[in-house]
Length: 256
Ligand SMILES: [Zn+2]
Image (cartoon, rainbow, N blue to C red; front, top):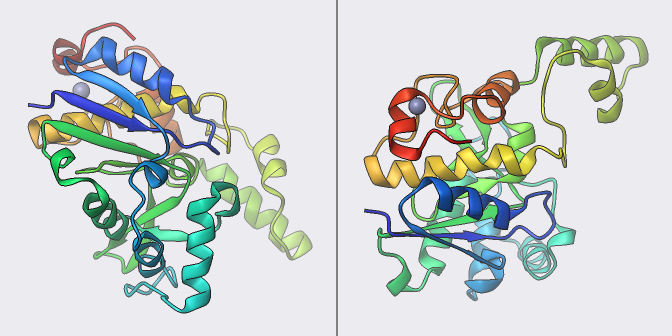
């Protein structure tokens, strides 16, 4: 039984962890608390090296890591100053293992779920297609939630990629993201989207649901526990009524 949920802030991200905690408290039978950034609260000496080891080097290459001194220094600076990080994809499983080990032993019990909200991009390796895939979350202990993943992991509408290709053919380069976001019909979340906090609520609940039941996701696409692969599905599952399917409304309440 999950009795305690601890959510950690992501200071540089457009995510209101207090609002997420309030929402969860109204929907689950556990105590919910918010702490500062996980990487500050549970900082250990080897964390910079662990981040360096988890760096994805190439989208099609399984092996990760670069522990050259300069890279470790970069990771140290990024840990000290979250404004300085960005543009790097990390192996989510490697980061999860590192953060699990960084948790004090007394806090690693499964009656508490730790949910670091991260301003880093994380991915998992796809055995079936031999490449890395960005993720919104990596469930387990701790359960990682990636704010950049919310914008970048689910596929955007077809028109977005068509417009990207059309622009590349005409001008030989990729259009600025803002241009695409203004020109493309269809719904998707953009970086720092004002709907970020609302969309993340369901992802945090998935982390709790997984430790409670062993099942991370719901098959019904209108439910907040649905595993969306497209932005349009994400919006349907997280931002439109109803919040839950009948089965999960019975567990987590029918309110929004
Ligand atoms: Zn459901």
